[in-house]
Length: 333
Ligand SMILES: NC(=O)c1ccc[n+]([C@@H]2O[C@H](COP(=O)([O-])OP(=O)(O)OC[C@H]3O[C@@H](n4cnc5c(N)ncnc54)[C@H](OP(=O)(O)O)[C@@H]3O)[C@@H](O)[C@H]2O)c1
Image (cartoon, rainbow, N blue to C red; front, top):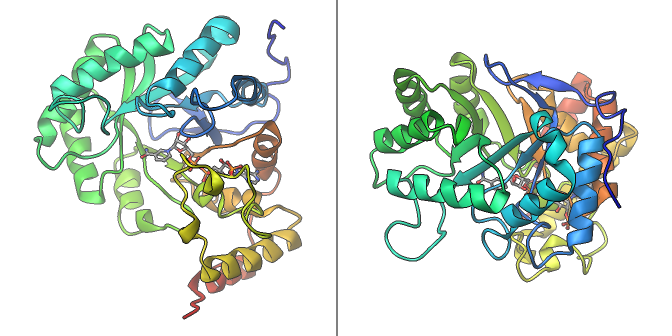
């Protein structure tokens, strides 16, 4: 059936300015790392993407290697652009990245200009787009001068293949350097994409300060720790969950007794707030104004709706915050 976007799509979502750029991002963005590959059910992927857009999610995050197999999430999204979203392209911020292994030989990985330029050309074909809104260096490359990687990003903007650039998984020090180089080239860094959740707080040790000082936005990935910070694993490992899938990145050995005790305690606290644990985990990230957007992954439209409903309660009392800290500090030998 032909897709017509909901007229109410901008009535519920919250938009936050990305650093000091001209771009506002939805407080909740959708990532296509899992659940959009050619191994997944296209109808389900289509329903999630349609529902996301109807809920005011204007930002869709991809990478060259998302699938599996690598490249197929971009192909799924490209098919959706053709089928459903062509007339809505100007309402969307679409990002992709290069930095992990994509093709054999010395030019299909990391951060050389050779790889980044070739990879974005390939991505644009799969996405059926003339340009992406944001192109990222997916990870720092210890063997390529950071100047070369940043010059490649700048070049791609000058070629009109990307409007903005970002970096992902760069440390605070590497980020400071990348921001300065990009500024000197005349292509400011729009955004950093780091992992951040209640279970992984490395960004609090310097990175968020660097971003704030430089007025660069952030979009945080795996905010639900790949599903751990939800009710998904409270009663075992469901068959259709990421931890049960052979190609899922979440490993069953990450679901330890200590993690389970924390999830149970956090779940009880979320209930007292009339939220699900997923909603509380998202709200907890959005309480920091340095976080522009929370980048979720979902395997169903109902999960997506659940995530967006986090926006109904974003405030925390001091006692709630203290209780969360206590739970996160719990240790079980
Ligand atoms: N830059 C990078 O290096 C990098 C790395 C990783 C991810 N990312 C980006 O970040 C995005 C999100 O990462 P992620 O998928 O790991 O995020 P996540 O939101 O932490 O985890 C997503 C998983 O959580 C579960 N879930 C989501 N909403 C739920 C709800 N309301 N109730 C219960 N369970 C729920 C689902 O698990 P089930 O599948 O088990 O249902 C879903 O697949 C990726 O798609 C990608 O765009 C970037």
